[in-house]
Image (cartoon, rainbow, N blue to C red):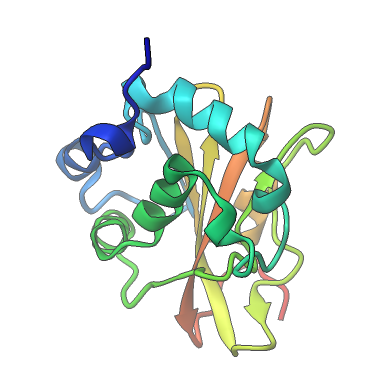
Length: 180
């Protein structure tokens, strides 16, 4: 018997209503916000298994040429994280404006042990001139997420048993504690 996935039913992987209802205009003054149930609970296990199965693609940067090889669930995950709906929700939560998705996954990656903490080596992409304005770290174990707007808070986020780190860009953004 086959089990249904989010893609089979066209269900979203992420809890947009929960995010809008509980975190609209959150205080990001310290550059960090923890969100339980960022991934809908019924999809956490399947998403974790699929991300781990496709680790070679999700740990390659940039991975644009490899993205067509992703499973339907892997493609849906990237599509939703890069969608206009997600961008607007994240903008409403953080107060940031004009976020751009990391479609080439230059700063978005799967973090697996022995990595212990998340982070970006550079908050500015020299090839595009864009600056990372927001990094979302999604825990594979429970689907919770941490939203970070500062390098020092991002470095403090533990990845535990693994996490998907997703970056969002802005033109000319500057972040406290970020390398120039």
